[in-house]
Length: 155
Picture 1 (cartoon, rainbow, N blue to C red):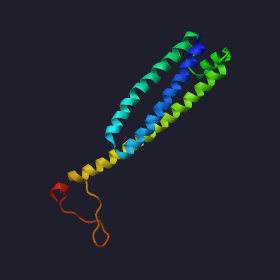
Picture 2 (cartoon, one colour):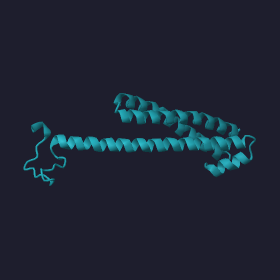
Picture 3 (cartoon, one colour):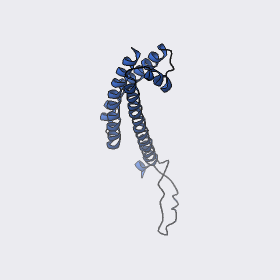
Picture 4 (cartoon, rainbow, N blue to C red):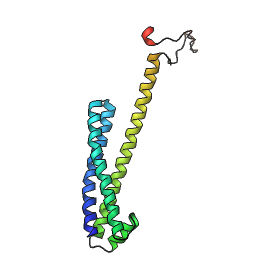
């Protein structure tokens, strides 16, 4: 009984993870385009998928523990060895694991892009506020000495 329930959870979560991966890729495009409206919508779409994956992960752990098995790959392998659908269980588990790793990699990529954009915006704001100035050079190629730094709005 636990084996077929686990197989159903794995199959459902593979579809959910594929949807999540698509949203993460779309999120990257929205970040690249700086489309905040689309980004906000995508973030809202991701939340229920993440909650569902978490819920199903807890359910898989509960099912394995109710069979007196550890809630990890070793417990799943033990159950699979005793099940008629054991090969499918292991294959689906591996497929889900690979999809979730791709989701994590995409999320890491998106995080790097967000941090780069934050640094860029921070630098621009610093220039506009007058706290930071870009390196300027005089006619000899030496760093120019600016007596007074003024915000761009007062220049």
